[in-house]
Image (tube, rainbow, N blue to C red):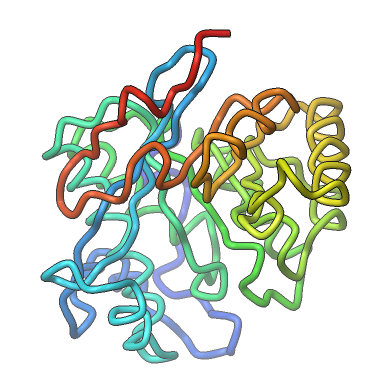
Length: 269
């Protein structure tokens, strides 16, 4: 398993904007100039009727919404914030006793060299005894990344290190199918715009079925997110999706592990 000390000798490296960045910043990840915390929301496996993963969702220090935090992220603190998110999510999951997968969102535009910037995550996982193959790095497809090959290289490096990779909000952003041609993540998460009322919308049904078939051919797992109704759940399960996330199962729990409602699983198949 790669370690944070493996074969990297440069003391400085150059970010995308050309500004030298001292590697010591990797160790200062939690100093970002403002406070934030996490809520955790489960991703469930309908087939096994168990929780597959918990997504770490950024919140203000008193549970305020994500935008209260993200609005404070700028070019000057983006790198440190991204690093702090990883450390805090892993530490929080460890303290809560999470044994399932942990899904962490990251900012691709905060990454300079993925093999160097991953050091903080590797160190945090080692410190808290969290297996690397149970950490999922999610990138939101809706975040503008002008260089798709660059994003693919980041995901490829994370996968090489032993992490799982996921594309969030698939079908709503900049990369789409062209990104899948360059890199096949472990997971794609269907955008909730495709999921909403899919049980009653034939165009959405056709798109979802096609994406499920494509992902099966590519060996990619599909998560349907934003599930709010039993009808949405039942259609998506019939379409071949077993991993789901949404308020039907559990709302995000601030600084705690959310309990899945027993009724949310639906009838035994």
